[in-house]
Amino acid sequence: MKKIKIAAVILLVVFLAVLAVDCMLAQRDKAPVFAVPLVKYDDGGSAEYYGPGYKVIKYVELTPGEGPEVVKVDFGSWFMDFSPTEED
Image 1 (cartoon, helix red, strand yellow):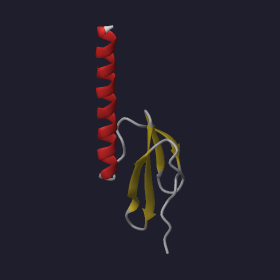
Image 2 (tube, rainbow, N blue to C red):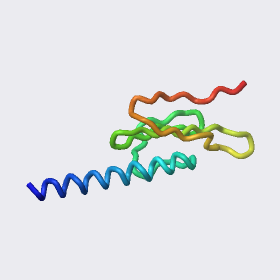
Image 3 (spheres, one colour):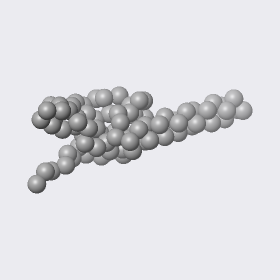
Image 4 (cartoon, rainbow, N blue to C red):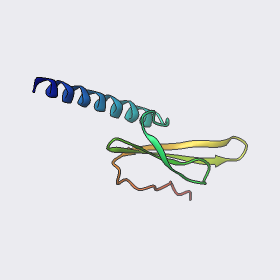
């Protein structure tokens, strides 16, 4: 029983570390390390990344002269919707 508790604590610590790293990368508008890109859009490189219990959406716009540019990165649950920013 003690080995099961130790294994559960280790798995929880690893999960929290993975979650923290990808969350910090999203705050800095960078792509996640531990999440897998499952959906890619043809708008310049936007993508949805799925991790264990979370989702990261990277919004990319094509800019004339500079090419693809990361606009923002959102971090949330698997139920978060893709909603690119609207330009006026």
